Image (tube, rainbow, N blue to C red; front, side, top):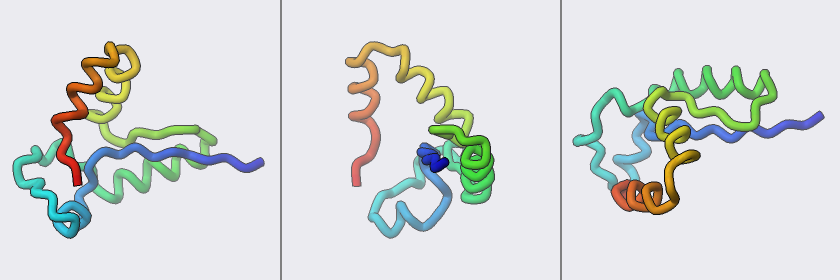
Length: 84
């Protein structure tokens, strides 16, 4: 059968943000995932047939919190995310 896996890594340490004109210098380095980490965890999830994978601990925690938090808390948190 055919499966699909959604990868939700959060910010990844690539030139993407610089090219998009987003200043990420104030983002703590521990929030940035390495491309290698994202690829490794994504491929493991694909092989296991998982529907979704969140490769970094901070974003695993955030995704879990968003599932149980009231909608207004999630909306307020999302307003603080820089938009491109």
